Length: 305
Figure 1 (cartoon, rainbow, N blue to C red):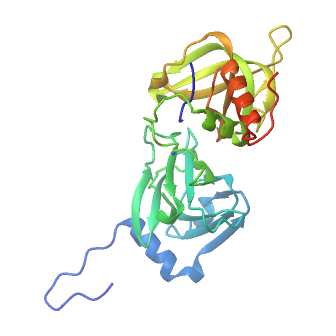
Figure 2: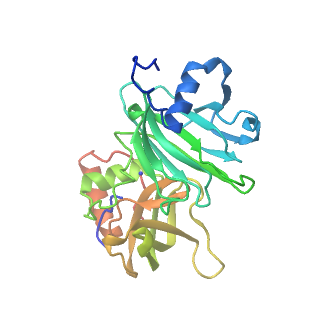
Figure 3: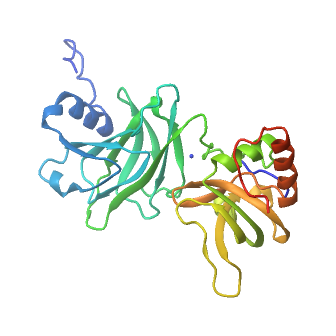
């Protein structure tokens, strides 16, 4: 393992039959737009949790949800009617297009999730589909999220939910590109990864668990030096087995295997899961950093011991 993994109407004319009714999702959207004053509105900064039971007497109600955060979740119990989920960042980034990634809860059910723009719908996650739990990504300019409950005889055991993240298009990984190349990082990419990654650790690969159904490999790391981490991905190991341990995910096609040697592991955390970025051998990192520092080109400081 030498380098990087890159790592989601109108009246009918006389003599003509009346126009067919629009599909249910389109109808709900029209109701939301034309009768906005009667729709319900909810706002929170990062997360929303609500119940469709408030729609029971008006099954076509559409609720507007406004979230102003870079990451959070939506949890809709007993889904009936529909939600329009408006996502915006909590910082002003005028020159950077934003990518939205959503990850449905693995037990999410009771509604379809669409990408909506000017009344046009594109299905992202189908109720009960096998890809529940898979990350879906789209540009914020492509539209918003429209969550429409599906007809159910019993809604008492249904909860639709997903996590979301908003990222700068310039820096965010293509989470939904499953065929990202597993090529080594260049020296420049390694040095930038050290400065910008959510985690930077020195350690070794203890074991690798392959998950073919998700096209992923889970790397079990033994960490000797913790330079930086986000969300407490790495935890103190049981006494006698080393100072830290944790799991990092990468693509199955990269063919990662356990073996000897120290590496400098970098990467990002998405939906609570650490995903591997650049991972040079530690001796290679020392050379890169030493050469860059001699030329005054190292973008940030880090210990090489």
